[in-house]
Length: 245
Image (cartoon, rainbow, N blue to C red; front, side, top):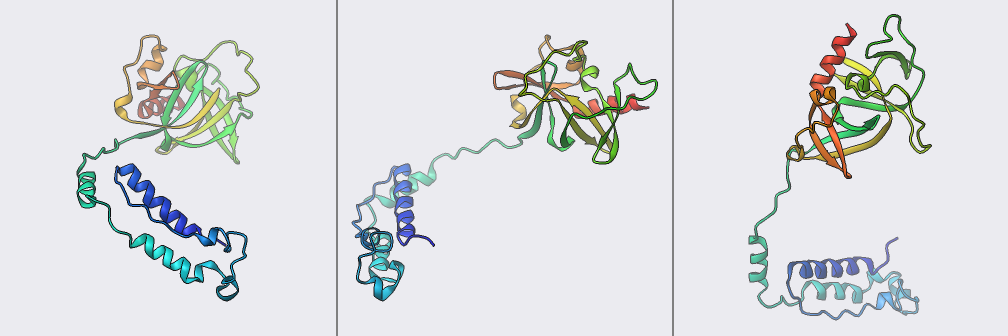
């Protein structure tokens, strides 16, 4: 059950905070908050508790709330609020894009959220005959369904020949993605999570990025002092699907 002083306390703090943040002055209102001293929220020694059971039923409590709401308006009240509402409003930037940021080898990359279905732990990938040199790694079981696993890192020219030992805090993951009717899986070295950015934040792609990665990127996003390559999902999946035929 809420304390009897909660409603008046919240109301008082809200009015004071609004006035303070708006630069408005308000005359002080003296409220005898006996409910916080001898009432239900205090030591409970008030004799009226036997009659009213709870402070919120007491006319003293109701009177205090009425006095707070009916207090006199401060000087220049209307003028100050008129100036407040007439100030130039800052409109938040619209059109933000939500992406999932992940790492392949040493490169941080991103793809739009609608592309992703889930992230699962690394599991056995069964090789396919005559498919050892291309970007198709094999088949893997995802919740009872066999899905084709591809190497986005190999497609982008990011795959290493020798796998280095990773810290224990970093685990390999498989990203389950879908574009149109194509559902695929590809391994990554690390997954950060979701990030939102405005398209205007994208920068030109530097020449230091792998050549293939440049071809499949829309631009570079600055994130936590790192450069993230935002991949073109349409071009990426078009190439991946062609490799399956």
